[in-house]
Image 1 (cartoon, rainbow, N blue to C red):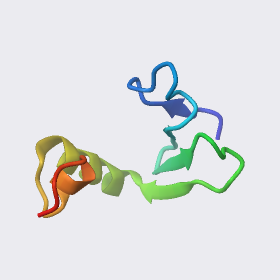
Image 2 (cartoon, rainbow, N blue to C red):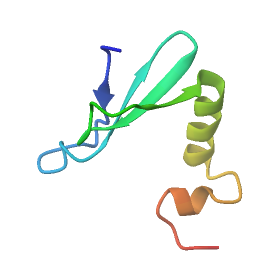
Image 3 (cartoon, rainbow, N blue to C red):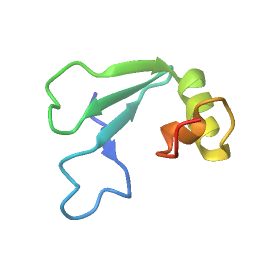
Length: 72
């Protein structure tokens, strides 16, 4: 996979310590930018989209914890 990209929130100082994502027609891959040679985690595109949407909207029982909120 050659189309790895980092979050736009990865700025100076944090640019080497974040996750990167890449996508194919059917899957999203996630890897640690500090260890790019290690195997990435892969998810079906629909599952990853559901996960990201839950983070954005705050839905789901653990969404606030995933966003760094206080434990429920």
